[in-house]
Image (cartoon, rainbow, N blue to C red; front, side):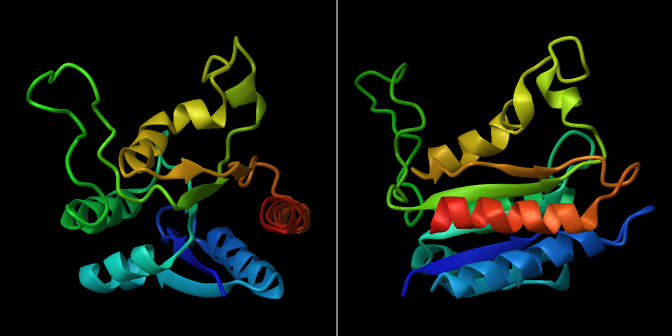
Length: 193
């Protein structure tokens, strides 16, 4: 049975208590188990053992992040997790930056060892979807994956490939919890069935 690692990046902070991200994490767990996957999970803010996390990554076919958008990206606890787990896995997740001394100007980012693994982002944002998609709006039409380019590249550096990103919008100004749940279940079935 293939394993999927669910990383819960929820954190009680400011006006948010992290409940929506915990709910969506549970939706993913239930939906993926019903599709026959074995689920490994980590709620980052509750603590983790770096060596155990590395092993979870190595055992898993897919890593799914559930996290809010904070200040135009992932929360600091998620970035800290990635820094500690992935950097600590040098030689297991990547060999080097991929370049060779005979031509150090080419090949950067090609030393990844996780070529058989995929990752997915499931995101919650207060921004409307138009903020990402409209050329004259805040993110100038780059789309949600453009906003997360740095995080996509971090995973590609390790050799991983992306699955389609899922996003819930207007989560504070116009929350639609039941719709988010149904949409996420449909997304997971489309990607993993």
